[in-house]
Length: 446
Image 1 (tube, rainbow, N blue to C red):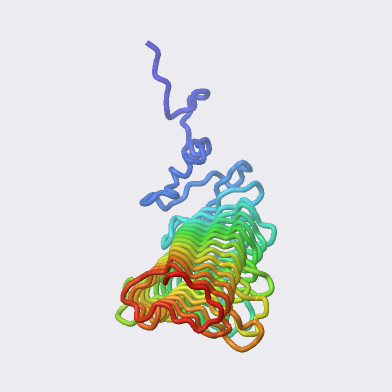
Image 2: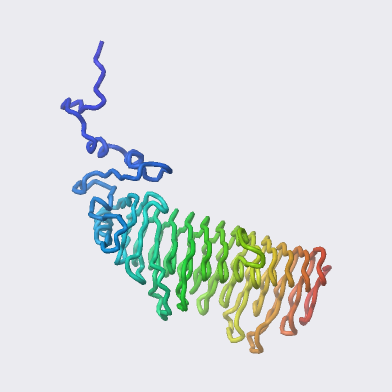
């Protein structure tokens, strides 16, 4: 009978295999499993192969000198940056074991480097100085990711007139970047994208952000320019500005399945001048009044489009208890051609607000198959100002359902509203069906 082959020795030398040799020979999945990374309830301590091994892909920040002990007199920034730089040579994962890492300078994320924490609230990056961008993905960065980290700011609010304020993550002219399962709290801004493409932000939480008089503070996610972003499955609560803002021509992006609670401004804002925000899809988001006491509102607006926003789709969103309107499209009286044009709003459910859906100085927008309940005005088409751009033309209002509109289900506000179409709408318990002060309004049925 042949003897059994030893399982804990090297069969060539018959010497015991060390733990380090065993881990070095494991596959990627094996090392992750051994380290307890990425698995709920797994071990928090990381296991790494030697730093000197040029074939390694796993870099523990503590091997480079980071302490993660929440001491304000220390700075873990240079040690974490050293781990990132080492991983950048051939690509790899930089792992943060559980701890609170004080950083006093921004960390530069490199291409093909993945920052991985032990989970939100377990691995925390804590700002050690005011107004720093905690992680920066610089120009030309590609194929990088950030997962399972908490970003906690000092929360020092300012009246700065520049955009250089405190941020968790700043992505500048980069592409194919992914941020997932991260928590942002007590910080002036969560994630800011500037002229980037193909950035995904998903399954993150943005809680109790802060803002002063600065127009650049208090946002959860801002996409400034760029295109093809995915912002989905995130949770926003108690923000002083918009939860999600697409601006400066940001286009072809998807904002879907996010939940917003107790925000002071619009939950989702599209705002642009000169360069048009177009072909974005705002779908299946929930602006909720959960946990609010009587007369508190979930946000000022659910979805707000300002100025040059065209051909966007606002679809199947659920918006409850906003202050001013569930969905509002608007342009100032001096906006010229920078006005909402050709947008589609369909399948949205709006409950309890002053107004359901509003179009001010917008043209050729389609409002169909929406459900509006318990508002003063269900849908309002109107103008702002007296300039040449102060018109609202050829909007279509059709197939909508209205319930308990205390003033009117649909209102065309003034004679500067021209050739709008209102037909085939229905509902019950509304004080009036259609109030028409426009010119050449096309009506058929209700």
